[in-house]
Image 1 (cartoon, rainbow, N blue to C red):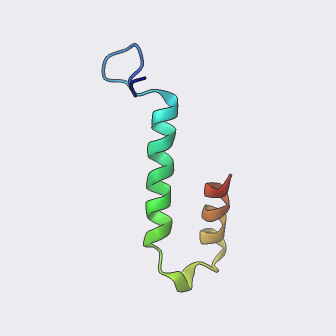
Image 2 (image 1 turned 180 degrees about the vertical axis):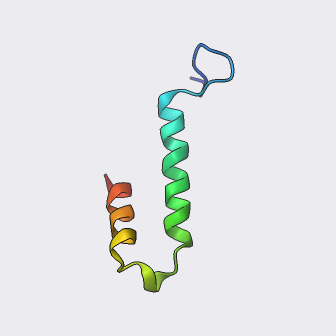
Image 3 (image 1 turned 180 degrees about the horizontal axis):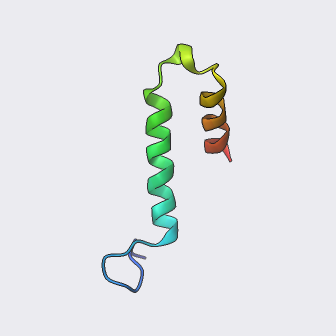
Length: 50
């Protein structure tokens, strides 16, 4: 299975979702550990866990 849908140049929904999740995880990992207790960071982590 390729990451492309029928239309040339467009990505499938699953592939795009994977890219978005990877970027969100990169963002979380870039946040210093001492900030992980802040609400916005916890909310990001909870969103990634689902």
